[in-house]
Length: 354
Image (cartoon, rainbow, N blue to C red; front, top):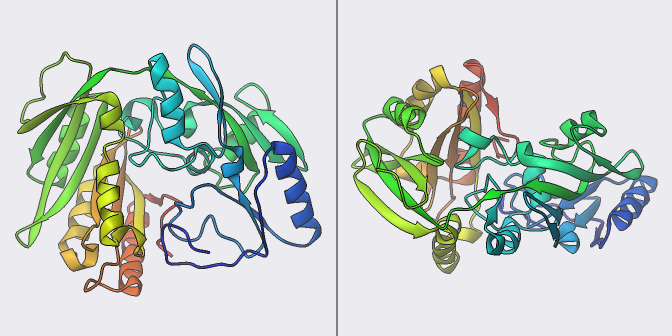
């Protein structure tokens, strides 16, 4: 069995597709009795085998479904994709405050990892926007929230399944705009990109570094919700989109990558959190030693300033034919991690720094 990363392969002793929290509990108990790990797996979008096991693989898609939607919250199964959540909430004019760029990942998977999106500078991670969780932990099914079992609630969010298996979640919802204005702002350097992300007022902010003429060019994306608002200073291009088209903007790219075979290639991804005052130097030095071959034909470099004075720097490599081999990409990832740790940064635990 492989995950999206395509680097690690593991064959589970058994695959179980539970349809309820009680069935998850039974599977976890049976695995423990046999001396096996029980590892939850949603849509398998991990990049270094985090959703794989030689023990019992819990296929959480059996727990997919939006069970109830209230005025500002939704109760969903852990195996529900964010695409499915959005399909249920948008007809009511509501949306999760933070969405991943790629919607075909599960609620349980991203909450257990953290879940960073373009609105995280305003709303934090997806894990920050969970109101309550149902979890299999300590040999029983329990609920937890900021008021009920808060220590478990904090341990499970971002805990990569190490403190319990998330089986359901109550998500915070906010009003969804009907339309957005997407603005592209060219930037001179990594430092300039971070300055723009700090200074621009927009609901959704992201940034990229793109290969250009043997070097790199930088651009910020500032997305304003609603029909009002003026493009930020320095905007070179604008595009008006319906909110769903914007939220699902990766779908055409994914379909093209699938057709080209790139989606099935190994994806040695490196993602590190950097202190904002040291981020530009780390980004520039990392890019200075990279070529297009080191990134892959469909690789992407993302830069996202968060609200905590932290920057998420993501080098999302694809081991395309004719480009650097997987081993070389993993070695480069480890160098980036070492560089991040040296300035007080940290790894984002869903990466593949090895």
